[in-house]
Length: 249
Length: 325
Image 1 (cartoon, chains in turn orange, cyan):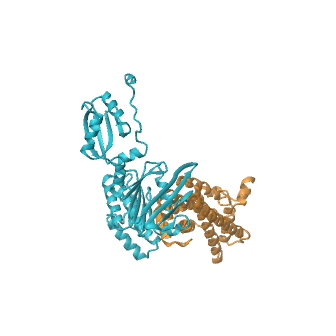
Image 2 (image 1 turned 120 degrees about the vertical axis):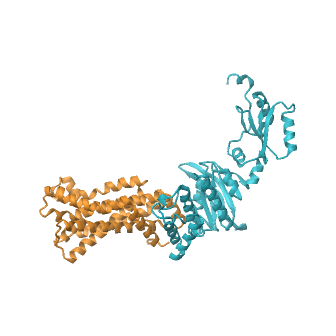
Image 3 (image 1 turned 90 degrees about the vertical axis):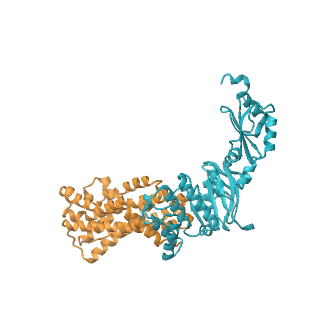
């Protein structure tokens, strides 16, 4: 089996993802609900200096991707908890091939969620000032971060001893974007939170996407976002490899 | 390698958390035979299967399967074996056909070949009708059959079955036995574990009895039964005093006894002369034995006598203590 790509395992991961009712609800309904909720329920009370729908789109994107990746953590943990992992190993299927199949499906599902967020945003008055170059920049940064969170979720799925534990850890991680510039400007937070918010990946990614979509100057945030994403990917892949061999041994 | 052994293990040891689960296990399985590893829960059966199927490395000892070392050449071993474990290794959310086609693709069959192989196996395992339903709707027996079919996709040379019929209803169990017999007839080597003696008796050419991480006996069902004399004479005595007298006379020839029911079992040979001689010896006046039954020894007898169910020195309780019971 080739190390990182195995078409039958990618097909499998897509099937499992499409037939996972919880996972698909998270992927397809959450974006709509969150978008409507933040704009209509909280939006009126939050002052950001811009129209709130224009402000909040990147934040909702990241929260949806966070929850969506949680589904992947559970799926990976399920594979490792069941008997199928022993069969795969006894068939000489590499752990990397199994995991990367799930990551590919995770990226695809999260990108669908992201597209849905954008679609709903447009429907309720989102008015970006981005030219094609800006859109490309936003999409690139988002795509890279989706890949990073999907690998992180896979690593969480391997670390967790059970699907329930994976769900728990993933749930906690999916709150990370809240402590960022996702929904309120960082300057409104108390000092301690502000420090966290200013130095975590979600803020870098959100600020980059927000600046791109509003047609503004992106600045150093883009580099921070790229470095953060690459770091998460490298660490998660390395961790997955080591943990997988330990778990399965 | 000598005389075409498909599985050969020597001195396997393994511990988990400081507890020795395998204590120097050696095995020889000739190609094309069915081998049953028989033992109670916790004897170490699954650990042996996991070592032979390359999923766990032994601490000590060596094993070769299908001509290759399970540690140094695990890739070569993996391409020649299939493992069907105790827990179904199939996807609930895929259909039976999808599961099998996927296994075929992972075994590097081309798409069409994988499809053809899946169809063939679905038919053979009586799953054609359920082929396009998701496994989540399958019964326990159907799941187990699909699981086994999934193990056969790559036409392995050696098949490991870890407790293939545990928790199956009698009909599914029978169906599973037929499948194993079929596989053996087709020339593959089958290594199965079981806690059911009738299963080992029925399927295996060779049976090894595993107890607390050690092989305590090995041979054909017939050879093992001969170890306990080939036949069992079950006796029932007239009363407790007679019971005590008889069991005293028998000593360790009594392989099993139940004082309350006044019954005891004696290992013997299946001949009238032997039985008569035994009666003459323990009950010369014909007053102690009320009933008897002579039957062929079952593997249960072997199992009990080998794994600690055996009564070595039945010491009757002295008469004085009986009154207090």
